[in-house]
Length: 426
Image 1 (cartoon, one colour):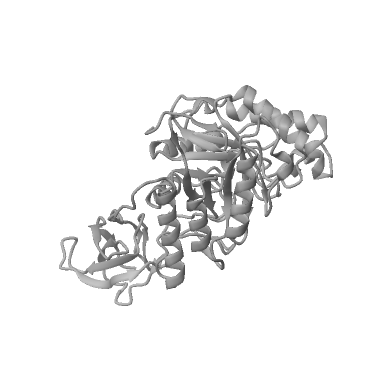
Image 2 (tube, one colour):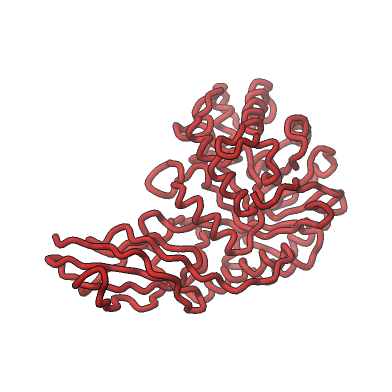
């Protein structure tokens, strides 16, 4: 781990020791359990590492990730059934938390989701008790005990890689009661926050709502952070909510915001200039697919950094997200990093390779004489292909061929070549 201090609250500010702590970053909701690669499954280590490296390249110091705890009701969830826990699922969460810590990335982790998505939600808890009304999540005594038992199990988990209990891990910035628990009564929020403070006293508590400030929660003593989500991003709403939360002596963050189809730059500048805004997390980051290209997600808000290969406006907006994150945390904007060498995974019907963080263009070269060349360019510094398959129009499938690939940054500078990949004839 690169940082050891817990983030603390001082009135309406987050503090890292004696310094105010502000951040910009992504939501990477799928780090513990994924829905985007052919069914519900754990993301591979490559995908976790690639996404976290991308977040770091984009200037993030904080990542918000639902499925590091909001994971109930399916065979690969943390809790497939009431009172049962999946050790392999927890080891996958351990891995993601460890890798985030290695990169100095703090985590905001919700325990449950308002919505009944693939990773479960509050209706999963009520369903386990045979209750049809999902609002019984807040009122039924058995369900509340079940939820508290789940929280207790999560925060007392000892990471199998680091040996650190989650409740003792300073890289966990805050536990969020749940994602967009829009109808949560104030008394329930106070009860759960108080419980959390008892079992994880060094961590902060967070609660939020979709589209508007949950103002009736501002007086809860055990609540530290108020999280509001904006679709689309709106600077006027951001400033209004942030000042209201600040006046109540709580920390304000914009835990999600939609970045296309809005005055994004105005929203980001407003967040940067208003000290009442402690952090922002855009929705949402997706990295490279194991078999080539990017993982696709079709909600209209997927960020594929650096945004090259679609249109200029999208690329500019994604660069604005990067610049904003560095400014929020007070870091100087660094030069764009040189991308690492890709890894070719297949070259039979098409050339496929694992993309590399920060790559905007790729050059593919082929030899028909041997792994030492001579080399002929098939694609010369071409923009990324989001689907991932690169057809070689010169390939004769009755002959063997050798391929190598290198990546270029947005500025055009090239990294090193991949290892040579031999493709046998059909």
